[in-house]
Length: 366
Image 1 (cartoon, helix red, strand yellow):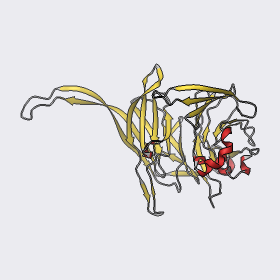
Image 2: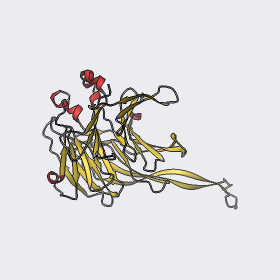
Image 3: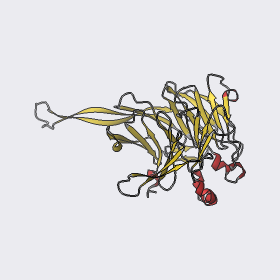
Image 4: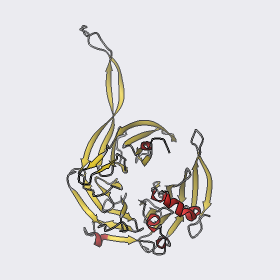
């Protein structure tokens, strides 16, 4: 961990053309890196950064919220000279534009001179301007924002109680599609939400009880009518004192191959779901079996509150997800392999593929 906790990275997102990588931190900053050489996809160079969010104070609750960026997403890039970024802090949602512009620089001349200044150079500058700010309607901390590449005029955001659909052309109007009443700390909470990348009418949201809800807005506008629920009824985590932390859905991914509908990330596993079987995942990758015996230690030190995300490439054959000890996992859906890649501690920070484990029928590789 760095000495200044504000520099801790909270989100990372790739542009649709693969040219930019955008990260955010606890200090409310958004930092953009650009591919240095299009023939070498591993080298990135610093491009630009800006302060996206500031501290916020709720006068009704007398609570001060820090500037941490809780969620981040990029609009599809059609012009490499312009990037539109949507980000959310604890309660606020902003859309900012980072763009390149040409600035003419002239030579200095004496004020008393009647000569016109000569053009010295034309400089390429990068600037940022805020585009939209959306009304604060969230009653609790925002946990996700998601856009669809096929309908960039709408996006969804969620907190523990609600899922909202927004229109970028009418930022003062919002449609509440999911409303979840929380009675106490043990109540089921919304943990994440995601729009489908292939159909803007479909989205899914996960809960703290391990439930995945698949929703289609074309069927009905009432949540009880258009939601198909997926839950692992055979999971043994529900009988433990750590159930809420182990069952909670951290992230959702739609981009999968074969007949798999979605993938969900949980603390100890990645689950693959088929719409024809909603009582258990069709396959489960167990990631951290050796630390099951250390759950008490993890709980006491708040490690069970850590969140992990999912990502996949275009054809959906591989899933990328994070881990501990400078390690991340690349799951091969076709070959049933769990490639554990270690980020080396040398100055070059080179990636070394050190362990590739075959996964058995139960999802275990140990």
